[in-house]
Length: 389
Ligand code: APR
Ligand code: PHB
Image (cartoon, rainbow, N blue to C red; front, side):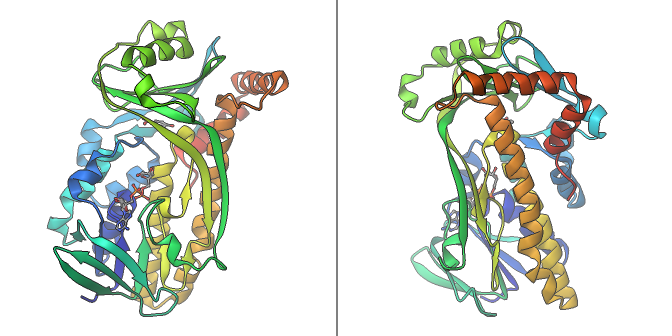
């Protein structure tokens, strides 16, 4: 098979890029290791920046989001004594959309056949070849047969554990990484949220986040040491810890219920440079990871894809090779700003084992400053709703 762009990975980044390219008449194929059902089974965050919502609107794929999504004009920081509301709508003129990533992926997946976006699922042993040259190709096995797709450009949207980043030679790539000394234990339950907006809490006992998927489905998190095992956390133990960490007012509003999903995920900040090598571009988690504190993972994937689609349209339509050459620098400029915000909010809202009384006082002082300064709140707000594309 021959195409213009071979996209590896059919998560949000791969599907969004595929739709954007097809909408511009660029031939592409998406190659995915898992089944569509498996891709949809992954529980992921669900706070969308306006830029991400805008891409779905541009594709005309925002109908369900507009009906089922929850526009939020603010969110809250709590430190055990008070709630500091960050009024993002008043401070930035923008809001965020609470809409599960699974639902966004489903919208992209369901629209693919009608829009001529070919997605090959259950492709085994996917490998990238000759990406440094002008005639790269992707091979994979499926239903007992070996396949090859020749393309002019390959885009790796295969997440943190995919093969694309590995296709860039070690002497070319550079990794920047911080692994955090805790994980997030998440619980999903069909119970109404305890608050109409998100609450990020820094309590003496640790971090907690009250989030949601809808008016009837809630998503909560607490941070736990990396040595913790999910088997040791009964639903009741999680609900009890959430009630303490979120504070008495929120606790009084918590509705308990059986966990639909409960798991512990590690946190890391990770950036791989460059995000282009020859005819290979990287988008999303294939190139970077953020701690979920700033809800940036999916939104960074969307901005990468926006830049990649812009570059590829210029390349294939106008023969503008500089557009592709400039992709990495353009994407990384925004990636690093989101990495900074996610890291800073993680530092502010979590207890680090190495922190002493002084560091705790610094956190209290920063929260006091944020509570009293519109300028400080505006800075947080403009990062939370998403910096301009
Ligand atoms: N071959 C083909 N596909 C692969 C391979 C492979 N060898 N390895 C991984 N994949 C697929 C995965 O099955 C997954 O469907 O690539 C896709 C990567 O999707 P994500 O991990 O969701 O990454 P991305 O699309 O960049 O989305 C980034 O969304 O999933 C969240 O936490 C993520 O918030 C982040 C954002
Ligand atoms: C979620 O709803 O899963 C969520 C929301 C905001 C975050 C992280 C996760 O910062």
